[in-house]
Structure formats: C-alpha cells, structure tokens
Image (cartoon, rainbow, N blue to C red; front, side):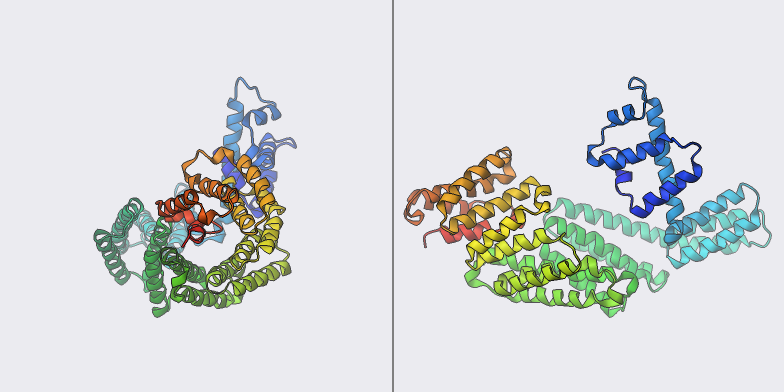
Length: 503
C-alpha cells in the first residue's frame, strides 16, 4: 500500500472535513485534481489502482511526472491540514508550535516576541516533562541572550546542564530497555541476564525520579510496563505477564499514581491480568486434563474481571465502551471452564447489552462462543444452530480464510458427535473442497489431520475398536505442536482427541 493510501485510510471524519475546509480556502479553481485524487483514493480503498487514477485524472501514462507532483502536493496539504487541526489538541504538538514560532520570529528579529514564546515553551516543557525539547528551549534562551540584555545566560546555562543529566539518564534507560526488548524478542526465556537488565532499569528509574518531579517515576514505570507487556504477549509468556502486571498494578496503587489521566492504563492492566491468569489455567488444564481441574487461576481471573467491571464505571464511564467487551470476554472464558451454564448466561447478558446499543459488531463472538459452550454441555443441535446464525452473519463473509477453517472443523466435530452421518459426509466434502488451497501449508497440518480422522471414524462401525484409528489418535496426541496454535481452536483438538482414545 502506497504512503498516500495509508494516510487517507487512517483519516477520521473530523480530519476529512477539516481537510476539505482547508482545501476550500486554498482552492484556486472549481476543478481541482488534488481533491479529485483524494476522493478517488477514499472511494477505492484497498482496490485503488494507480494506473486507473492517472487515466481518470487525464494524465499521460507515458509521462507520469505531473501525477507524482500532484500526489506529493496532496500529501503535503493533508499534513498541513492535520497540523492546523491538532496543534491545540495535544500539549506536545503545542510545545512544538511554540518552538517553531520562536524560529519564525527570530528570523524577523522580533526578539521580544521570541522571548514570549520561549517562556511559554519552557513552562509547557516542564509541565509535560519533555526534557529533550526543554534542552532545545534552553539552548534558544542562551542564543537569544546575545540580543536581549534582560536574559542572564548563566541562569539558562545552569538549567541546561542540570537538564542534560536527566536526558543522559533517560537515554541510558532507553538503551537498556531497547537491549532488553530485543533479547526478549529473540529468546523464549526470561533468563538471569534479562533479570539483571530489569534491575538496571528499575535502578535507573529511581535515579531519574530523584532528579525530576514526583510524577515522573510514574511515567517511566508505565513506559517500561508497556514495553515488557507487549513482548510477553508476543511470546505467549503468560506467567511473566501475570507477574509484571501484578507488580506494576500494586506499585501504582501503593503510590496513588492512578488517576483520570491514566485510567485506561489501569483498565488495560486489569484486562491483561485477567487474560494471563485464564491462559495459565488453560495451559495447565491441557497438560493435566479436565479430571484434575483446579479452579484457582480461573477464579482469580474472575476476580480481576469483576474489578474491571467496577472500574469501567469510573470517571463517568470513561473508556466504558472500549473495555466492556474485555469485561464480558474474561467472564465468559473463565465460566466456560468452571460453569458452562453460567457462561451461556454471560453471553446472553452481553447480547442484550449490545442489542440495547443497536450494536451487532460482536455477534460473531457471541454466536461462535455460544456454539462452543453448547457443544461442551452436549447440546449438539443447538450448537449447530448457533453456527448457522454465525454463517449468515455479514462478519463471517469478511473473516480470514484460516479462521474460517478452524470454525468449520469445529462444525465437523459437532456434527460427528450429533451422529448425523449423512450431513457429516456432505459437509466433509464441502469443507475439503473449500479449503483445499490451505492443505499444503504447514500451519494447517493439524486441522487437516483432524478432518481426515473425522472421515475415517465416520466410516467404521466402532472407531474405539479399530486398531488403525486408535493408533492414529495416539500418534496425534503425542505429536509436538506450538501451544500458541491452540489459541485459534474453537474446540480444543487435544482434549477432543483424548476423549476419542480407548481407555
């Protein structure tokens, strides 16, 4: 995707409206090709064709220079429009504007005006604790002192020196964090060397916090938390994620660092902790089997989910809409293990909530999980009905083909369990044909083995007495696979295979 397509695709309605107003103020004629190109890119989306755009704009296909100049001018105009719109919506953007205005007025020898904007920039840079831009501000105070007698350069030289120590520490922290992040990305374990780096990070945070405002330690801790939690999620390292989130959450609570400005961070921590605990419980369940089910991790996950439910009500339901799904999702996942009947009630409650909002965006989630839970409690026909509702939903048509495969393998398992062999044979043929293009891809090997096993089992009188099938099931149970692969399985293959093995 070209850069201009990416830019236009991410524009909000407000930004589009602002750009057209900006364009209208600068338009020199009624027929502007830059606006025509803008509208064509918006309308085309992923199907944008540059050759068609050139023809549509009456440019010469042999000499495309005029088209590329137009495209570059459009990128610049959109950038100017965004700057005008957002400058006063963000303190960092406003600070950059003060610095920019200093340079404009300095070039015009308007030194009193320069001092006015430098003072505003200094106050704001200190307020938002942007020490790198504060260094630029102090450098310009020193520069301006050559033209204004009322500026004592030694004052700003001293301030700049103190600020340089903070910047040096911040850069050192960034270096440690980058090194740790890289090591965790390429390593599967959180080793002793990584722990040493983490201790260095924490020590550096304390050192910097002593030199800055009392709130700066909070910002650094949040920065480290965001970096590490992202890595642990990518690695599916849920024990490390649980430990990180719990320690970070407890520290923020103890220091009374949570407030309205970072309330979303609190909601994210609660969400991550609930999900990590559920994942740890699920992995233990797969290792030990359902007959050894211990609800400790699932119950603890539910506690964090309920806390999330309380917190999304805070500050006039700030971020309520965004985190409502995570609240219901965490409750459903844990109850699907501990109490499937209650899990169905959670889905019904979530569906009623979405209907009140006239929001059908989560229908896919509701129908799919309802089908899986109904299967778990042996209501196979009702489970299949929920899948039918899923198939006719608009979201299913747009779903990724690899995910559709997982869903339709799930349907084959449920149909097999329902003993409807006629429908099963019909659907087996359909699924194999529909997903034939994925069969040669290694990541789908296990899915196609399940499909073949279902077909084999459906063609014998008693698969538990068939030595060939039982041997195959045993081999599939022993096969190594990445635990992350199970995340997309609607019905967990390992558990289902275990049930098919003759005891």
